[in-house]
Length: 234
Image 1 (tube, one colour):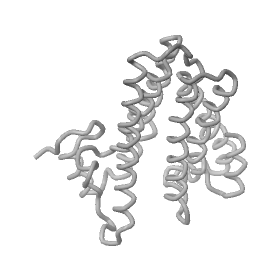
Image 2 (cartoon, one colour):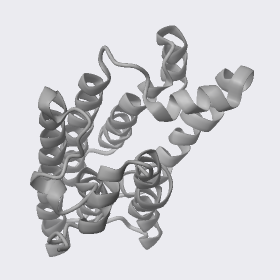
Image 3 (cartoon, rainbow, N blue to C red):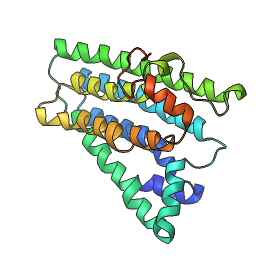
Image 4 (cartoon, rainbow, N blue to C red):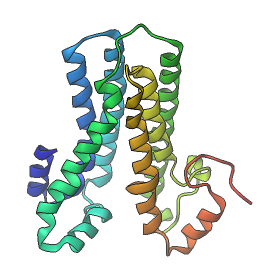
C-alpha cells in the first residue's frame, strides 16, 4: 500500500488504490502458499488470483482516460492542504488494515484434507465470481452505449439488485472462508469485515448518496432491492 501511495503521488490520483486492492490479496495468498505448500493453499491461491486479476483489470479499464473517482475527488476538496498526509493513513494504510483483517481466513487457513464444507465453498465462490463478473460486464456495456447517457442501469442482474456486483463480491469472500477451513472460528472476521464495509460503509452507502437527488434513481430504488437479488416490486 505504501508503494501504491507513492505511485498515486506520481499519477496524481488516489483511486489507484482500488487497483492495489485485488493485487494485495494475491500477494498475501502467494506468501501463504510459499511458506507452507499444500493442495488447499494452492486452490485458495488460484481462487484469489483469478478474483484479484479480474478486479484489478476491470478497475484499470474503467478508470483509464477518465477523471479520478468522485469519492477521492471529494476527499481532495474536503481535506485541502492535508490531503496527501491524510490520504496515506486514511486511504492507503487503512485499506491495508482492512486487507489484513479480510485475509485472516487465508493467513490462518488449514491444510487438513478436504471436507464437504470446502467443496460447498468452491461452488459458492464459482457462483459469486460469475455473478460479479457478469454484473460488471453488463454495467460496462450499458455505460459504453451513448444512448444510455444520463440513464440508470436497470437491466440484466441490475433489474433484481441495485448492487449485484457487490452482492457477488461479498459472496466470494464467504466462499473463500469456507474453502480455507480455518483452524480458528475467529477468522470469520474476514468475511464479516468485507460484508460490513460494502453494505454499511464505503460501498453501497456512498453510491446511494451519490444518486440520492436523481429522480430516475429514486424510481429505481422503489422497485429494486438494494443488495440481495429479488424480483422487482410492482
